[in-house]
Length: 102
Image (cartoon, rainbow, N blue to C red; front, side, top):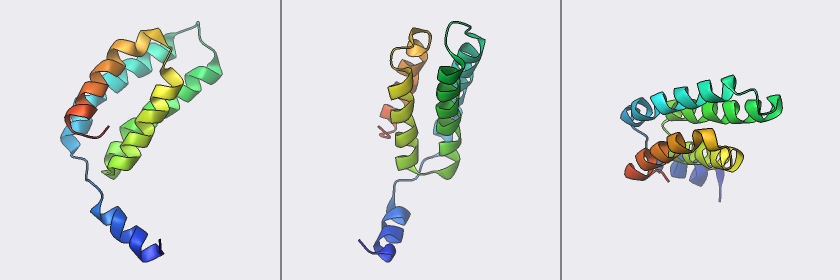
């Protein structure tokens, strides 16, 4: 694939509406507070989860569906077994699925 084809493909990529960010933001905020306040997980694990939560939040600003999806997949892989976040992850999944982003 040439550079020009990649640019055209990126321009044709599905755009992400700011409404989605507004719906997801409270859940990201709650998850961030939970992780920051948890003394039972390592600092390295906290940093990974918080970095991916931040990445997911800011990926909406790019309005690029692929980036949102990539951050989502990363968050799932890192926080998959972290029980305190599961109910919030479930709600975010519903929102992203509703807008066909995952």
